[in-house]
Image 1 (cartoon, helix red, strand yellow):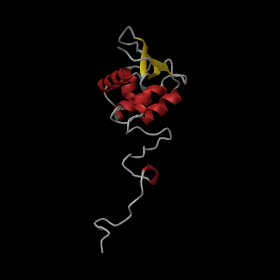
Image 2: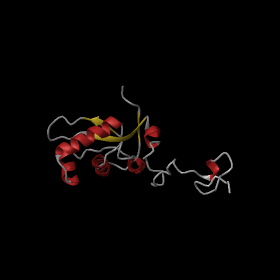
Image 3: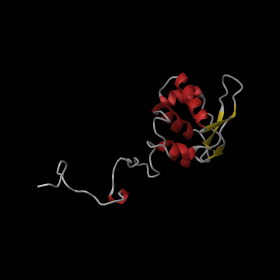
Image 4: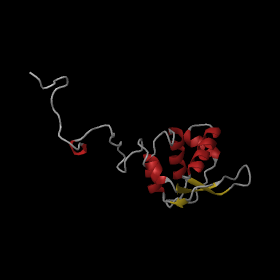
Length: 144
């Protein structure tokens, strides 16, 4: 079953791509995503650079581009709106966001909207403590 996808403009889409962690979007796929977005209209439509041109621009093999495009499609980050019908005619894509985008951006390794790392949940803050704080040195039993 395919996830619901929503169209999105290039700037908003690229901010989402920046935020996704490498465990979801590996660096090579992220590089492909940014290169691909530059070939389309600002509204995220009419993207049809072709695999050969993408490989030249990215400095990678055509196979790497094909795998990266497949990953972007499977994640719902691009939608193929028209398949090229000859070897010389490229597919046309549209930038999209999947229905589970909030879940992807809630990943612990995802960057914040300000493109900063998330604060680890391991840190204890005074606000997170429910009782009094024991500031005695470790090993000090309080008995003298």
